[in-house]
Each structure stands twice: as structure tokens, then as C-alpha cells.
Amino acid sequence: MSVTVLVGAQFGDEGKGKIVDYLASDMDMVVRFQGGDNAGHTVVNEKGVFKLHLVPCGIFKDGCKALANTGMVINPDELLKELSEISSQNVDTGNMFISSRAVILMPYHIELDSLGEKTGISIGTTKRGIGYAYADRSRRTALRFEDLLDLDYCRTRIAKIMGGINAELRAKGGKTFTEEEIYDKCVFWAEKLASRIVEPVSFVNNAINKNENILFEGQLGAMKDIDLGIYPYVTSSNPVAAYAAVSSGFPISKIDEIVGVMKAFTSAVGDGPFPTEMEGAEADGFRGDGKNVDDEFGARTGRARRLGWLDLPIIKFAATINGFTKIAVCKIDKLDTYNEIKICVGYKLNGKEIDYMPTSRDLYKVEPIYRTMKGWKTDTTKIRRYEDLPDEVKDYISLIETYVGVKVGYIGVGPAREDIIVR
Ligand code: GDP
Ligand code: IMO
Ligand code: MG
Image (cartoon, rainbow, N blue to C red; front, side):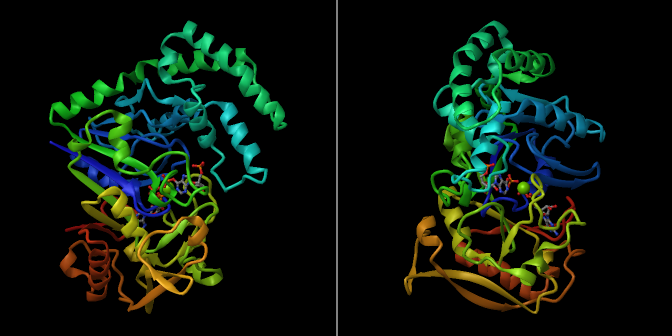
């Protein structure tokens, strides 16, 4: 039996979808435990090319349960759309389940997010309503999937909350919603989704007690954690491994493996500090033109990603707050053509080297300390054994391991499931 939690080690989009899809072959269940459809997890396998937003990337393995769990904020319309899209590509979605305790992300959350992004509080969100759904969870005015199982109760909840929601929408100049239209949506969602709703704490703990192999799939990455990331340019949940146990309601001691997924360089979407960010043509070299599945454009919003050299203090910080037992390094192949590769190995703040991760206020001011390594100038995309990698790649991997103090167990050399070296 094993419980594995997989999380992003940077600013999101590290390649989590690809690694989850690879690891799912050994799993009985894959669980999303935070975030919503702000996620864009790319999977390329024998069934096709997919960008998953709410459905866990274990859905492709026959017999593997996929659970959208407590801790998530789920837009039912987006979930239905995604389920219909993937089933039209011959993927069996019969094993997809939803936690009764997960929050329903409503149309008014999206409206409020869009209004927020038009004002001075804009941080470059995905405009999917994420922050506003979590705000409603915190102020106890959210509806949850359990409410779809008792529509009379659901109607009373809607009647209690809509006054406040509409007052906020009106104050911000947004579109308001009637109680009836929200209730009608709930009736529709109940009809389509009720059979998938499960009591999540027993669902997960029974699987753990039955010695099943379970993989928890994180969304986003450490630097966008609401508490420990680059506040306020963060998401509204905790994309850290411990939160898998907190939101699912199982003891943290049950976690056996924590996999941190990182890119061989750095990317970010949205505003906020980014110490190793590149400009212009240098960034375009990493980004591509958008024609290939692995070009650097957001899998959710299509926005051009901000790009930079690998920032090891970020990976070390992510390892510290998560407790990685293994690292997966994706996109090594994207460095194949470089003569020289720069890696940030520290920060200076006000001229002095620091040994901690500063918050946004100071992270904007840090000066990265770079080490330059010789590039390998070799096509790595067909290599499948670690021994066959050029020495320069091994040096790059070894620098990551030494700096972070965690073994690199997986190396990605292309977007598809089989483009991976396992050590
Ligand atoms: P996620 O949000 O962490 O699941 O990552 P995304 O799917 O948003 O972004 C990762 C991108 O990198 C996608 O376009 C993947 O197809 C691609 N990718 C993942 N691993 C590799 C790799 O090892 N090599 C290459 N070339 N592309 C990869
Ligand atoms: P995956 O799971 C990259 C970013 C947004 C914005 C901030 C807050 O594919 O790695 P939100 O909509 O969550 O309120 O936006 O977080 N963001 C992501 N960036 N990958 C993601 O998901 C992201 N989800 C949110 O761009 O900066
Ligand atoms: Mg993504």
C-alpha cells in the first residue's frame, strides 16, 4: 500500500499532469485536493492530448477511481463539459466521483472575479471565480455538493445567501442573479451529478485501510500557496502536500511519498515577483509559437507564460515546506540546444546573500546569483535510460539534488507519457 502526494515545486505548470498520468498505472485512486478549474494539466497518452481542469489525471487508467475531493471549488458546468469532452475521446468516466463536502463554484463567483480583475486589486487571476468561491467557503456562505442531494434544503440555503451576494454584485456594478435561476441550476446539476457524489472521508480512509495505492494530485505550485507563496499574487488554497491530508481527513502519518514536480527552468502566469525572469527573444526561445502542445502558453487561459532560468532557492523552499521524498524534473529536453545554461543558486538582498525565501515585498528586490553550466547540445528526447544521458545533463541533475537535498527520480524528455527516464 502507498499514499503518494504529488505537488508543484514552482509557480504551477511544472508538468504535474504528465507525471500523474505516468504514475497512475500503479494507482487504484487519484484524488484532486485543492483548487478548481484554474488548473490546466496536460496529458499526452495513447488516448490523445488532454488539458484537464477538474478531472484528476488518473482517469485514463482503467479501473482507477478519480475523486474531486474536499478542498476543491468545483464549477459543475465546467465539470460536465470536461466529462463530456473526454468521454467523446473514448475515455471511460464511470469512475469519476465528487466529494459531498466540495464547494460549488457558482456563476456569481466568476462574475465577481472578473469585476475584481478590472480594478486596482487585479493580480492576473484565471478569472475562474476561484478566490471568490474560497471566500464564500470561509464566510460560510458557500453551497456544497451535499446540498444537491436535498433540493429543499438547497433552496433554503440559496434564499439565505443570495441577498448578500447580489448586494456585493450591485455595489461593484456587476450582473445580479435571481434565487430561481441559481436553484434551477442546482436542480440541473443534481440530475446530472448526484450519482457521482460520495461521502469523502470514508471513501478515502476505506481505500487507505484496504491498502490501495492512492495518488493525491496537487494543483498549481508552492510559490502560489495562499500563506507561504508570493502573497497577494497567489491562489486561494494551499498547494502543499500536507493539505492533501487536511482536506481529505486522513492522518498525515499515512503519507509515504511526496513527489515535487519541477520544470528544468521556471515559468509563471499572472503578476508577482519572478527573480530569474527573462525578457524578449531570450524568453521566446523557451516559449515557442504555441503550435506545439509543450509550448509555453497557459493550458487554462492560453496566456503567454513568463519565463526564466531555473531558480534553485525556489525548489529548495518548496522541498522545505512540502518534505519532498523525490523530485520529477520535466522539460530537460527544452534545454537541449543551449550552449550555456544559467542556474540561480542564491539571492542577494541589499547586497547581502540571504538564506531564506523572502515574501513578495523583498523578492521583487533580490538579485539572483547565477552559476553557468555548459549545455549538452544533444537531443535527449529519445533517451530512456539515465546512463545514456550526456554528462552535462547528469551534472545539471546532480546540482539540483545536491542543492535541494532530494533525489531526482523522474526526468521528463518530452510531453508524452513514455517520454520519461525513471531512476
Ligand atoms: P501542470 O499544470 O503542472 O500539469 O503542467 P501544464 O500541463 O500546465 O504545463 C506543462 C507543459 O509541459 C505541458 O505543455 C506539457 O505537455 C509539457 N511537458 C511536461 N513534461 C514535459 C517534458 O518532459 N518535456 C516536454 N518537452 N514537455 C513536457
Ligand atoms: P496548474 O494546476 C499556473 C495563477 C494565476 C494567478 C494566480 C491566482 O495548471 O499548475 P486564481 O485563478 O487561482 O485565483 O489565480 O494563480 N494560477 C496558475 N498559474 N498554473 C495554474 O494551475 C494556475 N492556477 C492559478 O495565473 O497568478
Ligand atoms: Mg498547468
